[in-house]
Image 1 (spheres, rainbow, N blue to C red):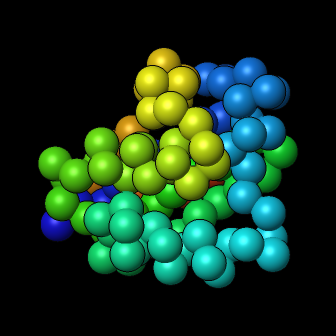
Image 2: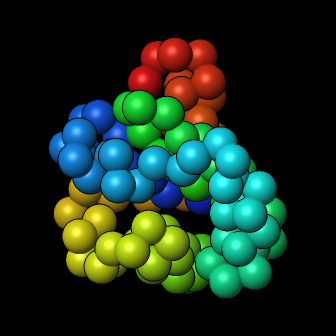
Length: 106
């Protein structure tokens, strides 16, 4: 199992892409359930603001492509639309990234 941070943010994606990948608060609980059922995550958290949409996942490291596909499918996009602007951090880098986001450093 691996801890993975996968997402897009204001540094990697245009406003148009970020708006299309945003999660509305009223659909967040359903999105989390679907992510664990269809996206391959055992556990998950979603952070979605005007500047970023990120998935924090516990899953097999080899499955992060499945999570990216889920993100695209959930928002009605092609995975190729997100590949150029998505980032994936694993293990310690994922924890470091999450902490930087939580502290407002990123």
